[in-house]
Image (tube, rainbow, N blue to C red; front, top):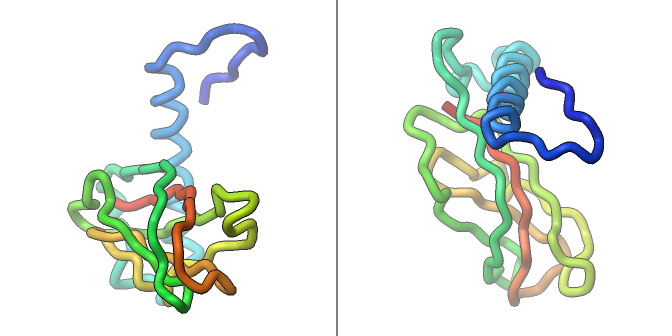
Length: 128
């Protein structure tokens, strides 16, 4: 992993390489920690992890559930998604994976206590 110097501008290649290395490390660790829990989703050792991160504005239902199609579907599977709220006023609370229903095609989350309307969701998703 390349160490960046404060104030210096990092190259896109260096940043991408760091994210790829981080995604590989997280994916390997997630597979080790998950054991039997994610056995059906465990990433093969030879697979290259895919990391997607972004922000979306989604309309949620009266129970706070919302979802969207990944910008690029994960071709083989999804290991984990980390959700955070991108709102400070509309929904400043935590987000949860929507009944653990995210998959390689869609990200799904719940904004507990948010009875419908728009929610900004930030995510980091790791799959392969």
